[in-house]
Image: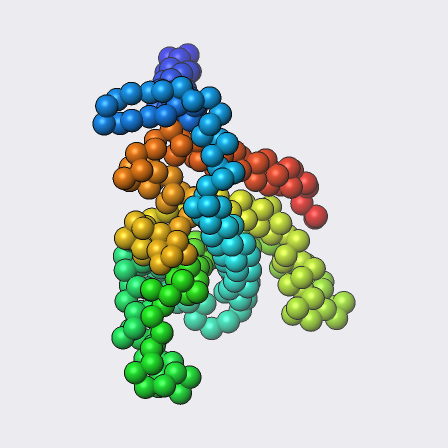
Length: 294
């Protein structure tokens, strides 16, 4: 037993050491880069103090990326949370074929983000199924398909729809797992008191799922603030059309590895993004400290 405890202690120390090497040192190096002007081609580091941070206030591209990211998060997070909660509640009820629907709703989670992006780009192309459906329904004239991929008014909205569709199954599964522990006697008591389906949902289901909802909101906010791969594939790394799909993470990539050669400035933006995510995490943690209502 003592040998087991010793090996466990060694494993923990090893884990802390590895985290310190691959995360701690890397984070400190990013902070170091944010105070320098870095030229990767000549391997030179010129100290510039707070110049990179001051540049954020005058960078129009940074402002655009921030607005795109915030609007993306404000739309996607509430939608995916509410839809997942409603679907989980329905699948947890006594409907026929609920196990089949659970399997079907979970399938998008098994598909890679890159594949989903390519599929949605095809669906929303000028000759894709979405335009064909709108033309056949008489909403659009024949031959008058909308170029969703190249229109700044629609490009980011397409990514929003794709992100909601792909993340709802994961959160639905989380809600379903939590609903399995909800005592049915609570619903039975509510029925005796004359509560209808909506009242049982708002007064029993929603309060009971408060802790898992906090987790869903937290992971959703972090995921949307870090959204990169879908915007990169959708715009081929440009953030277009007209910077309408440019996110903060994509901008960090462009400044760090693009033609701008501004690794120090990219590190500065990454730190600001990390601080925002940390602030959101702390707020969610405080909300989650409240006791369950039952």
